[in-house]
Image (cartoon, rainbow, N blue to C red; front, side):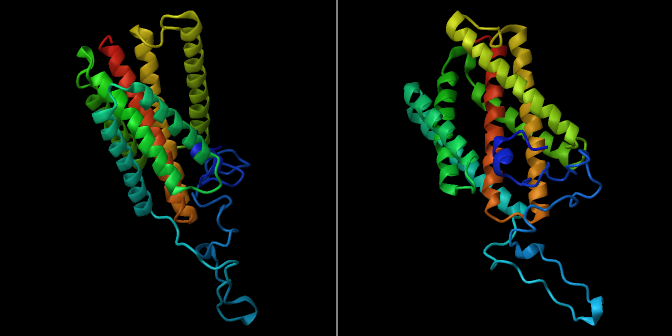
Amino acid sequence: MRSSNPVFSRRGFSRDTGYAGFNAQAGGPTANPYAGTNPYAQGGNPYAQVPTDPYAQGQPVTQAPPQYAPQTRPMTMDDVVTRTGLTLGTVIAGATVGWLFLTQNLGFAVGAGLVAMVLGFVQSFKRRPSPALILAYAALEGVFLGALSGFLNGLPKMAGAPMQAVLGTMAVFVTMLIAYKTRIVRVTARFTRFVLIAAMGFVLLSLVNVLFMVFGGGDGLGFRSGGLGILFGIVGVVLGALFLALDFKQVEDGIAYGAPREESWLAAFGLTLTLVWIYMEMLRLISILRGD
């Protein structure tokens, strides 16, 4: 079972036949997180070598030679934190530009958001993470978010809403991190299937709502106002929080498997996508609650 995050689903830390950390045949969690096939053990990873048995036929201790020369050390949590900070910092820098200069020119900001979406899809389907592509996505996504947030902040009923959305996003992130580390939230195969199904249903309903708005006018199915809109917004935030749990699991398994250092860029990209999702859902929910 793979993560609902398209980055991790396409090329992430679970490149074996099942979800990282789970037995693919049994379909359930293994007792040992290192059980199951290590996707990096056969790829020339010098850190995945196993010494030979020193008691076998009286042979001296030897180290199995790597198939390829080592080119990088394994990914660490420090790598993930550093690159996630750099990616989110680029989003903030782009958001500052959008807030200061593009609140009155949302057309350009929407264009930047569309280009960011394209870059996000390109990276999701690349075989290797591209730092330049990831940072370009972050900058353009930041421009879009900053311009949109600045525009909404200028509306009478929405003053201060972007800051509330930022604080709400931070609160969700910290809460889910604590819940994951303390094992209050456990990422199992059943948990992952539930999130995948819920995410597909949420996206499908959102698309249907957009179609009704375009061709029928008004508020479509009513997901942008009233009680139904508030409920839909809460579901969106909760789904984003569940995505974070899946992302944490993927990062943890990647480190345990000895994933190459470059994969930390992929982790940063996936976490950034999830945080952007949560921020947008928070902003939409706040706008509904304020009646704007």
